[in-house]
Length: 295
Image (cartoon, rainbow, N blue to C red):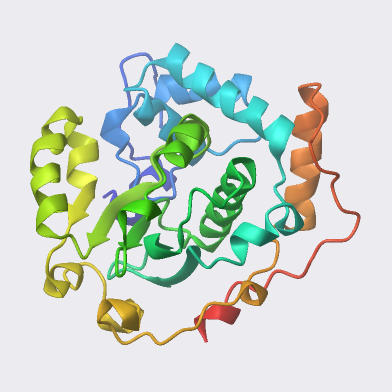
């Protein structure tokens, strides 16, 4: 039985021919398909990356099609990036956080967190590219810390109400795509785009065939609100999109998401890799209030 990860926790997960005896895998997330990686590779990665959970190691193996060398290379890149740039603090990207273009609120029908992006709030000609990138990481860390223990993926809801061509920020996506692929592999359940007008839907019908099947299946352009409601209850859909959630965004609803333990782990990684963070680690940790914006 693998539902909710119980099979792997209790040692009945898939094994490969290189291992004898009972399984030692501890996979807690039901989003992780144990048929897409080998236990022997997880064991090998444990030796190189002590302290990281089997869930994390498995995500990197799945992202690299169970290629041990490539998974280790990707994870090393992520840890190097963290040593140079993390933790990203609210004070370093306050202007971008204040725009309200991105925030975490609500859940999809399965109970996964919703990351909501309002494209009409994006103005590429006015934003600072580096600060906007830090804002994306900052909210990604919020999502990670709000994740229910049985999941490891979130749903991205792209709100295109009021979207204009000048709101498209391709430069930001190019700038951050590599770092996000390394830092957060196998963490997106689906991407819902609404409203998708005829032009977007037509372009998508062509472009999607140039994507790998896994990515293609995650992106769901919706022309009708009923399509969004297949995955998200109305109470969690913003009112501007036709749902019932009348939440008014405020940056005051979000504090830095890190605990003292998180900050210590970042400091240890930086020291181990000889990096120097671009912003000092605070001596006092801001209070984390994960549910305040849910009220």
